[in-house]
Image (tube, rainbow, N blue to C red; front, side, top):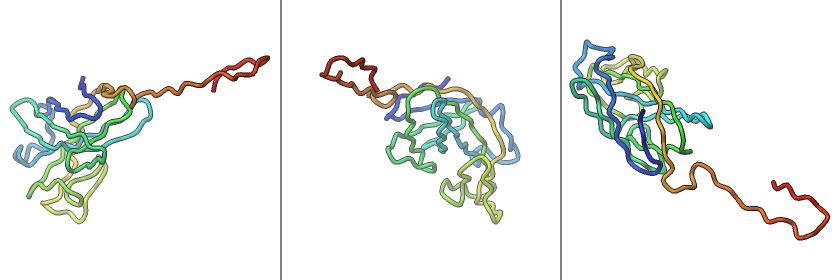
Length: 160
């Protein structure tokens, strides 16, 4: 399980090489697209890592916190805190790897056209799992507002 904290950068190490799909290209031509889905409100966040390094059996990914998310720069804002699901999709290139709009798919079903060696192609799902995002400030997950009881009598007050 991945663990992270809201409003902070985080790093993840996942096993991807054992599940690699496109073995016809060098590992330097592979990147991974993350799909984060919140269990509570079902919101979805897509992101490529700010930095990705493929080792022999695992890959490390670094994500940056930013209030203005950017799928291509690895900037995420994972709120609300709580449990999220993650899916990791392999994206491969046969030309130059460019993580930007028009060159890297934005979702797992995105097909860039016209076909070009410098445009990434989603090969498929390589791993998935659960992620827990803890609340950094104590206000992102649940916020309660106190209500004052009425000052008049002869009424039963239930709150709002």
